Image 1 (tube, rainbow, N blue to C red):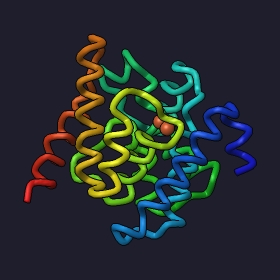
Image 2 (image 1 turned 60 degrees about the horizontal axis):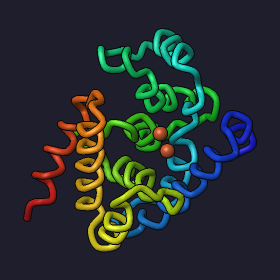
Image 3 (image 1 turned 90 degrees about the vertical axis):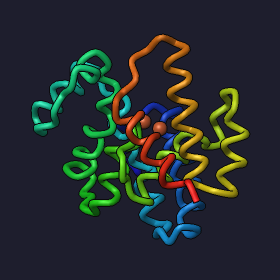
Image 4 (image 1 turned 180 degrees about the vertical axis):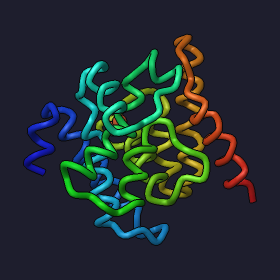
Length: 183
Ligand SMILES: [Fe+2]
Ligand SMILES: [Fe+2]
């Protein structure tokens, strides 16, 4: 926590604590270890404050493949780079925790339970105030996967409205989850 505090702005650190709290609250409902959820939530944005050129540099260092969209929007790489930093600098070895950090920004089809709740907690933590968040927060009380599906759909709608690039993984994750939540 000391190292993380040094790497992040106070605002981002507080956000990370709230994601950790919320993810650890969701965890027992789906049979995930709350401590693992807390850890993944805490570290999910550990690479958030790296400059775009540093993120690109770290990808070369770690052998992370940089796609077209990532080259245009290197911020998307803070998940995969964060996962590598969590391993190297924070000594995290648990594959599910590392995956949750790597996958939290774009999602990934077939993502595990821990990845899902970190992604959702990142979206609806109490500091988030954007329109529609209350609805998804309330839905999370009933059904975590359905709430994540709506969160991904909101993200896609927002990016469309803003005329921004949409990462293919976000679309693929939404389609996968749509099938998952169907009874
Ligand atoms: Fe993030
Ligand atoms: Fe975050």
